[in-house]
Image (cartoon, rainbow, N blue to C red):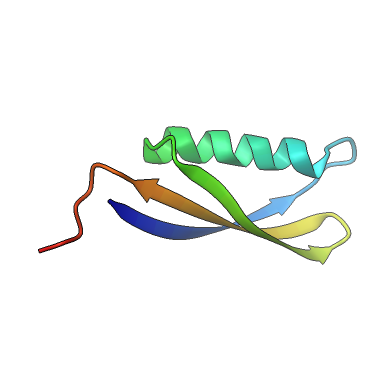
Length: 66
């Protein structure tokens, strides 16, 4: 099992909600990194419509012990 953190920038459009944007980000990460274990760890607001999002992703098929 291997846990990694990823940082993403999210900018909301006029009619977007933060929860919808986060859900889309998680779905995109699950598909791109082929893991169902994606967690929004922290959301940092940088501007009225701009956020930095920290994602935790777990890769259960990867063994990190030697």
